[in-house]
Length: 95
Image (tube, rainbow, N blue to C red; front, side, top):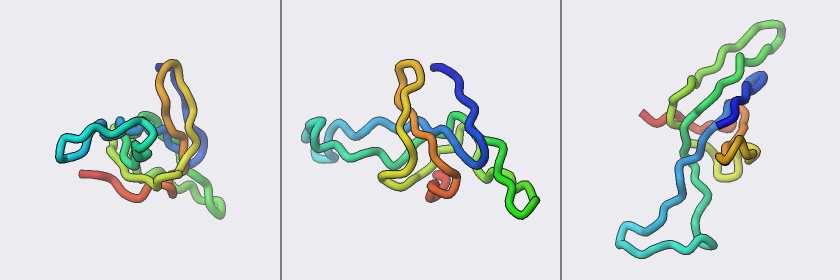
C-alpha cells in the first residue's frame, strides 16, 4: 500500500469487508451489500489547533472504529480502497 500522512484532525481508515452472507447462510449479491461502518485506522494526523491550543487526537493507528455510513472520502492507495475522514466523523472505538 502507498503511504499517506493525513493533515490536521483527519485519519485514514481501512474499512472492513462487507458481509458476504447473512447469519442464516444466504449469500448477499454485490448490489445489496451495505457499506461497512467499521474499520481499522492506518494513519492519524497530528491533531487540530483551536483558539491557539493544540488538541491531540483521541484515536491511534491500529484502533478499530465505528463511523457513519456516509462518512469520509473514498480514495485508492495502490490497490486498496481507504477512507479519509475527520476524527469527529468517528462514532466510537471498538474494544
